[in-house]
Amino acid sequence: EVQLVESGGGLVQPGGSLRLSCAASGFSFSSYWMHWVRQAPGKGLVWVSRIDFDGSSTTYADSVKGRFTISRDNAKNTLYLQMNSLRDEDTAVYYCARGARFNDYWGHGTLVTVSS
Amino acid sequence: EIVLTQSPGTLSLSPGERATLSCRASRTISSNFLVWYQQKPGQAPRVLIYGASTRATGIPDRFTGSGSGTDFTLTINRLEPEDSAVYYCQQFGSSPYTFGQGTKLEIQ
Image 1 (cartoon, helix red, strand yellow):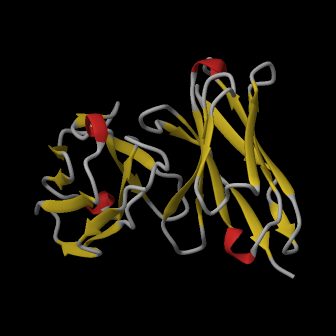
Image 2 (cartoon, helix red, strand yellow; image 1 turned 135 degrees about the vertical axis):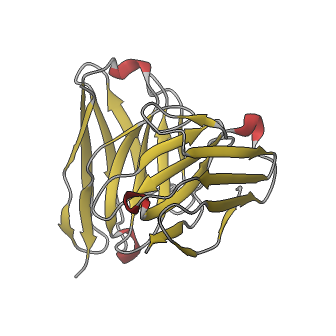
């Protein structure tokens, strides 16, 4: 059974940092592109970042470029999102999702709250 | 960046009726890499349609995707109460892989 389990969310002050993790199981993790998608409370889905099979190619939404870094450890079947210089508007549930041309499996999400 | 505009914002229909949801792109989506998701409150999104018209595994044939280029449609036939949700389109043609703002479907 394919499973994606996010962790690492929590309350952080503006300007702070947080690292999210997404533990993958039930499939060949290194064979899939992976994404982070976020959703602010009561709002729509926003794509954040994507990484290819081995981490050699990454892309970001303009709103997080230069502040967030996506990475992966295929030996540990884990996806990461390092978030620096956090802002109030980064408050959201962060989902990891699998796939290159569509996201067929999603995690349950982890809540990040940026507030003083 | 490709901007996706979904309409209507909210759709209120009765069981058994047909829903037609629109997703319009600001420029052509390459290879029709257009995806439709369904999201219910408190849940992660679920993929319904990919490649503009291919149903994902386990999705009933009441759900149909169509369109190409810049105009795409999700049609849901014979609406059931469980179809109440927010529906999003997303494009994977070029990064950033943008979402539409969503259409809320209410089944009354």
